Image (tube, rainbow over all chains, first blue to last red; front, side, top):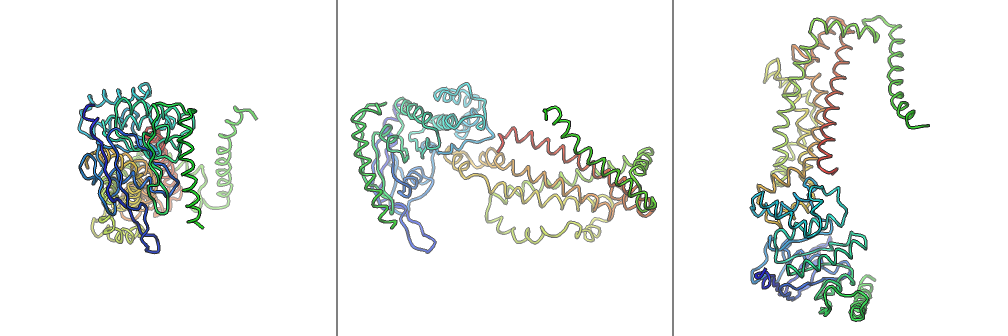
Length: 264
Length: 254
């Protein structure tokens, strides 16, 4: 864990992503941006659709390459996905032919861990997310919240320095969502990975993030970075929470109005 | 209507349908000489006749032998080739024109060549059955690999799984339900072409039984042969279905 304290530092310089629309024109999914993320920071990317938040997290995770600029994590350029940096998806990405245990073991076996050891480690991580009793169940026998817990256990089993989460709780019902937010915070506090969390829910961003990055669309860009000074977990009805909420909502409103102007 | 009655009713309907057909058949047979249209009882008598001297069973066993050897040969070539072509887009592009041209050719059209190449006996029949099973299996396997959700491969890449592990532990199981569909379709097409293959060049088997009976004007034997083909085909199809359901349950209903 000591090593994890100091790693997972991300640095982006002049990073942009362009694509060609059907007319052959060059469009910016993400216009050039600079960004620094410190080790063990919990960063939330929020913004309306088209703001490039998913593009950005895919670039950070190495699933996609920027059109220009450089991304480094702990000083090394990101060129491809790495088991030090695990992405958690909205639709879980669990293998339906494997049990919960088998899915978590996959992360370890991919690293070459022997089966018996992998099983013990996987069970430990299922226990962390409260699913030890469901280890033998298959994904279709699990609820959405449980599936996402398995995906989190699988990610943790790889002991990554960075967790990328792309709207991981967006498909879950409100109560499950609140509970998983608390569990995620607890895991983050215990293991201290750097977390980059994409969401379109401002409350979720404030509740989780030590830093909230508001993004704006057309072209996708960083709009405002807000450091959140709240204890974790915090009280959602606290006046400081409400102040952050007001600040971000006001900014969000402006983003929306501008986007509407653009659309017209 | 209570549930018990509904259950009986749901079994009754197909039985009544079948009995209705058989009595219509018996009725119609009354208007024709047995050589032209034997009745159901004639066919049952013919079936018993064929069974008593063991002729029927030797035809059945040789047909099943041809069917299963051709089917397994098709499985062992089509599935590895399909996995390969599904995984490598360049290879698939290279093979696509050939496949598109070969696929619409009826396996029966290969028959003259099959006899030229393999003579008569088991080989040409096996070749025809093989062809009829090969293409549905190949195309289903290619599709199954191509339709693997990208997220499965993304996850595997993220955790640093090696190429071999991705292929064995992700690609094959992910494609499995789709491959199963191909295997299922191929059972049907292969069984249909079994009779055709045996009618054309073999000296034994159910297809041969049917053409040979025509040569002797034993119409009752023809219909008995057809009935056996139908019942065996149904049995194989059912067995396949059971296997598929079993595997699907294991696979979590994807």
